[in-house]
Length: 489
Image (cartoon, rainbow, N blue to C red):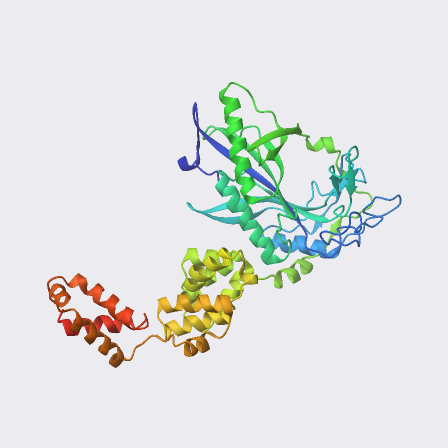
């Protein structure tokens, strides 16, 4: 990975000059699978506490873990989606620490030999595309959950999450601003959702980020980093980075030093606070899990998974630009969610693809936003949007009428063509009807006729009057041409 020169626009102003923030991310993504990494217990969200727990998850004596093949496949698919190297042999290790929601007293994870090695994610930012290096992806089990607000003196433990498969995706420290970090997580989440390997639902904790932040003077060595644990929204990731970078700059500028530690971000107070001093890897006493053989598969297993990968966002965007002639911006917006891209393609098929994109991006998205809906809950189908785009294309309706028609279809449903017929919404292109309106307006306004000959820009007033008289349905081009002819301008 080549070193990126410091971008002056991304530097943070301190009392002693400019500082550069350096960010690396560890994303914990819950693997989409029906059962856990080493047991057959359900991974469904919700459920009564401790109802999705097998004897393995509760760490009962003598229980042995058995690897879930679907979770392995999901990790390999994700590695392929990150253009990363897939390791045909990897090893599960025990990471030892004691915590009430970790019944085994260790977490089964991967340390020196992960299932996926180096990869890359391309991220679009306002300044152009950047490459963020992926260091590794490994599989590990999630811990349970301690609940502190159900009893005045005791904490309760829910093990429903215990043993759920996670992919930990570790980036290189290649990010240089909170905006880049947010864009990176957004892009990674899009890739995972396209692949179907993680649903990316941050509210349920299915995607969480540990954010490593350090600061340095541009061109200096990396500073000491602090890790902000378990940030669960993209907005909070941005706020946590800004807050932590300014805290570190303040300490260094006051002559202090940064302690390497783990911190928590409190969005209500807008501050990060110390959780514990950072353990080093040796504090966890990693060693290969004696209950699990090394995980081995052959290249044919990988090739078979690669053959059935869906088209990923970068490839889809490139195709939308080349095949449909879309701008990079529109293509980006449309590929951000797979459901949106599918909807768009259904709508663009066989008609003016740019017009379809414009209508979806400008009309549909705005209206869905207003109602707090998304493409999957849209009351208007791709076929209905397609019909509206066709009606504009064949000049049955004008762009202005299309907006009214869209609103009717959005709120009441129905076939756009039938609505136009039934409600008389057709644009009038019959020049005889338009001509009658034009003649009437000219006859009624002799003073304005004199003015427009001296000042042709006044033509707009006449166009407006004719449109008013025809209920907004006259074809504006026809009106313009007739008026110019009759007024001699």
